[in-house]
Image (cartoon, rainbow, N blue to C red; front, side):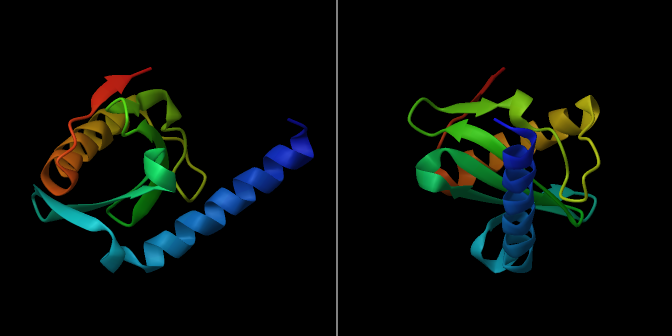
Length: 111
């Protein structure tokens, strides 16, 4: 992929994230304790997942067919800042719990 195409793809993903953040009522919510709530929504026929917590959002690659959450797909928040390893752990735990509760989907971590 050329750099121009990658930049366009990143811009489209960022716009999609912002749109999803504006419509959190369409996402499933799960309380994580200490007043923190996360929002999860499966997209694109079960291949992508929107995640939002504490006003920050990101996208993750998943496979609902195979019950997989690709940890390595968690790279950046909607503001462009990187997602750190400790954050990835919290995000993955929240996604797994939310998908189990709201979608009756057991996800395993991959990559």
